[in-house]
Image 1 (cartoon, rainbow, N blue to C red):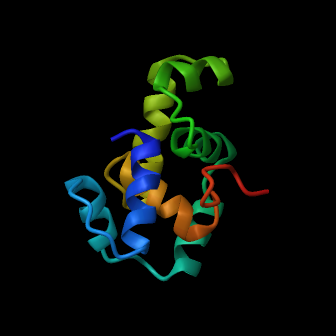
Image 2 (image 1 turned 135 degrees about the vertical axis):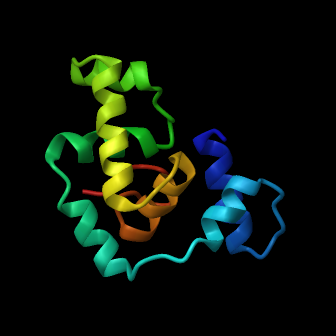
Image 3 (image 1 turned 90 degrees about the vertical axis):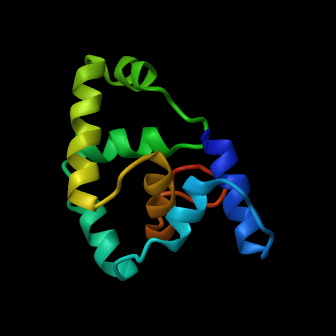
Length: 115
């Protein structure tokens, strides 16, 4: 699912509309850690992993090669960072990452990074 589709589905879910995207429905049903604990885990990520996470979940939906280009690293390095933060944060895919970013305040509902 593209990030724009994820945001639309989350908005629809929040408004009690039914959405048929299984990935989003599963992400919304996944039991979450308390938000404070999730936020602590996100904040504990090394700077490079956190930056990759921010770019990966951004509403523009940066691809792995785009993230690599922005950071001046190889796509395999970006994939390594994604694998590491997914394991550390207990997420399985981009949908989980977007939902986590919204819950923890890493990203606002408009898809932009919060500072």
